[in-house]
Each structure stands twice: as C-alpha cells, then as structure tokens.
Amino acid sequence: MKTKQVVLDGQHLTIQDIQNIVTDKSVSVRLSPSVATQTKKAEQFIQKSLDHKIIYGVNTGFGPMASHIIGREEVIQLQVNLIRSHAMGMGEPIAPEYVLAAMVVRLNTLAKGYSGISYDLLKRLELFINKRIIPVVPEHGAVGTSGDLVQLAHIALALIGEGEVWYAGKRHATSSILRDLHIGAYTLKPKEGLALINGTSVMTGIAALFAVHAERLLNLSVELGSLALELVHGFNDGISEKLHGLRPHPGQVAVAAQMRKILTSSKLLRPRTLLQETFTVTEETHEIPEDVQEVYSLRCIPQVLGPVHDALQKAKKEIETEMNSVTDNPVVDWPNKAFLHGGNFHGDYIATTVDHLKMTLVKLTLLNERRINFFLSARLNRRFPPFMNLKIPGLTLGLQGLQFVATSTAAQNQTYAYPHSVHSIPTNGDNQDIVSMGTDAALIAMKVVQNAYVVLAIELITLAQGVDFADEKRKLSEKTRVLYDALRKILPVVVDDRVLIKELPNVEEFVKTSSLIDLEWGSGRKKK
Image 1 (cartoon, rainbow, N blue to C red):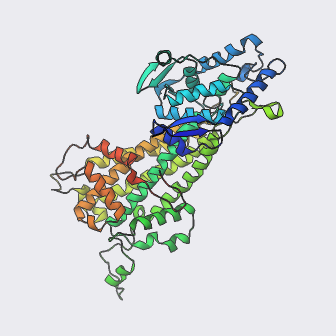
Image 2 (image 1 turned 180 degrees about the vertical axis):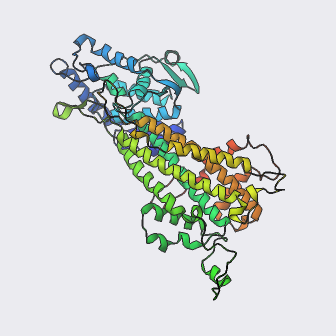
Image 3 (image 1 turned 135 degrees about the horizontal axis):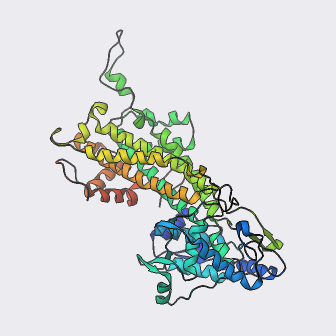
C-alpha cells in the first residue's frame, strides 16, 4: 500500500488534512512542484535588495530596535540570535500533535512563496514533519501578535539542531536525533529566522484540531439528546420540520433534521395526538399525571446545539483561510519588487474564532450536564430510580459519585468560557500595544474539549443505565441502539456498587475515537 500524501502548495490545505497527518503516521506531506520556483524568486529578491534597501528584520533589529541597521556580515547571526533569544518558553510542553499541526501549517504558509526563504529550508521542515521529529514546545510564551513568536522559535530551534524534540514517543536532545538519523543542522539564510517564527501557525494548528473535536462533540451531543428523548418517550413535534422551518437558523434546522433522521426507527417517540387521546379537557380544572412539555434540556436541543453548528461552520472557514495565508512580516512582494510591512501576523481572527466556538461548547457541556441531573433525580424525571440505582436505593448508590464528576467538570468549563482574546496586555516595549492571545485561547479551548468529553461520557453511561432499567433496548432507534451496545461492551451495567476508575477511561476514549459517533449532515459535511 502506498503511503498517503498531502500536497502542500500554500492554497489548498484543509482541516481534514491536518487531522489525517496528526492521527496517521503513514500520511506524509510533499511540497508541490510549483513551490520551488516561487520560493527561489522571493529569495533572489532578498539577496539583491540587501545592499541597497533597509529591510525590517533582515538588516535591521527587531521591534523597538528596528532603527538599528545591521552590518552585511552579521545578517546571518541576527537570524540565529532571534531564534535563540525567543526560544524562552516555560511550563509543560504542549501536546506533540499540536506542534505537528503547527509545523504543517507553517510549511504551507511559507510555501506560498512570499517570505523570502530558501527552498532548502522548506525541505528541511518537510523532512522533520515526515520523520515525525517534533520539537518540544513549552506552553507559556505567546501573546499571538507578532504571531506565535516564542512557540515557533522552539520549532525553529530544532531545525538548526538545538533544543529538544520528541521522536518515537520519547524526548531527546535535537542534536542526538539528528546525529542518529544522519541529518545535519540547518544553516539559516537572511530573513529565515524571522520567517520561521513570525506567524500564526501554532494557534492555527491547534485551532484546526479544536474544530475536529468540536464537530465530534456536536455529533455525540446530538446522539445523546436523541437517546434521552427516547427514554422519556418524548413528543415528536419538538423536532418537527415545520416547527424549525418557522425559525430557520441553519444550525437549528440542521440539528433538528439530524435528530429526526436518528429517531426515524425509534418506537419510543410519541405523536402529540396520543396525549389528547389519553386525557380530555373537562369543565373542571384538574391535574393529569403527564408532562405536556419536556424540560428545556430535552425540548430545546436544536435551539441550543444549533449555535454550535453555526459557530463551527464559521470557524472552519476562518481557520482554513488562515492556514492558507501569508502571516509573516515583512511580506516579500517579489512580483512588484517591494517589501510590504504590515500586520498579517496578528492573531485576532483565530483568537476570536476559537473563543466563540469554545463558548458554544461550554453551553453544549451544560446542556448535557443538565440532562445527567434530570435522569439521576427521581424527583425530576418521575420514572427512573435515584441515581439510576438498579439494586437497593439507600444501600447501593448507583451513579451518585459519578454525578459529582460531571458537575465539577462542567463548572470548570464555565470558568474557561470567558473569551481569552480580550486579555490584551501591551508588551515588547509597547510596540505590541494590542495583542491577540490567540495561542493561549486555543490551548484553553482544548481544555474545554477534554472536559466536554468527560461530561458526555458520563451522560452516555447514565442513559445506558436508563435503557437497562426501562428494558427498552429493542424499541430504541437503530443508531442509539448501536451506541448502547457499543458502550456495554466496554462498561457492563452497574448494579452492585463497584469501583469504575479503570473502566471510565475506556468510555472516554470511546467517545473520543469511535467511528460510531460519526454523522452525515444534510449540509454535505461528513465526519471522516
């Protein structure tokens, strides 16, 4: 079987490409043949301009020191100094898959041919990606407004043979891995240090993976909402095409349509006419033992998840635009023989995009947490035993302890919901006087993702207990029954109290990775 390849030309990289590269080691990247020509022209323009033009970051200092003109013999040392001086990140390393995603994005943006770097540097970054030599990048250091300077500097540091890398799952000195693989350290050329670290590639790479998880969480939340509606024998008018067509937000309409599709084969949903047939209106006021409407966490699923859907669509478009853009400075406009000094490295597009999508995922988490509470509270649902206890309430405790985990995890997500992109603190001698905080915004968004998976895994466990109590597996829809069966293969029904600590990670991994969570959407989107 031939190794799968993603061809990079600076124009067509997708979120799905990033996901494929990160999750499948057999997927490699390859620069398009057109890249070499464009890159060479930009590099030649830099070389011709060095002696008679002042070029920021090439023969000048950086930031507030840009008025210092650098001697011709020192322009290479300037680039090395830039990398070493900025590779100052602290804290725990960010996940290697985030760094790999950032490397792919950086290679693609540089491949557009407007950065003035050599083709040799592109090939070196391509080599690191394909051999999965992944630099160790600390968490703290980026303000996201001359791009991800500090984090990208750690990637650049590895390319010149310094710092540390992950290789074959272990942490090593870069020099030892390059020696073992017979790869020499790369020697920088003018502007190459600046081009490597000046851009939004770290925040964009993380944002791409964030979007993948956001779509999966949306899929799972729709499926769990459908199963929950079945367990309460919900009325079908709440997801009717007519109802949602009268308030036609694209996401709301799409979620309702998805729920109708999932529940087509269900024998548990009820038409509203059954209520009228069972209970009649009389001349006297009286109470009936039936809820005319479900609680909002059951009745308003399309209205709550619709904004997640719409935020996701917007986010995917903006992330893919960013990963196919030139984001460094100055831009080498070689066709017009000019250097364009601007701010394409500013990360506010990614920062505000991930903040918006993150906030909708926090609301998604709260929706699922509220349903956990509903199903574990006998007083609220009036059908299931306290805490889905399937033995002797009082003596056994069922899922009582697990609810605390869901509550505390959802509460932490509420704290993370605040938009990090508004935390602008001037820095760099006030040269960077308004900053994006885009990388930290993306890292916080990924914490929201991890917490959401925990809460949704707990709801899946809760709903499965409900299926067992009601003994209604055969009446479930085909999709929800498959989901139930898959869970029961990794987590048997909880009857006697037992320690679940070794079983819970398996459920969490299932909701993160199982293909059973995949959904096809009417808009043409398909989770691969």
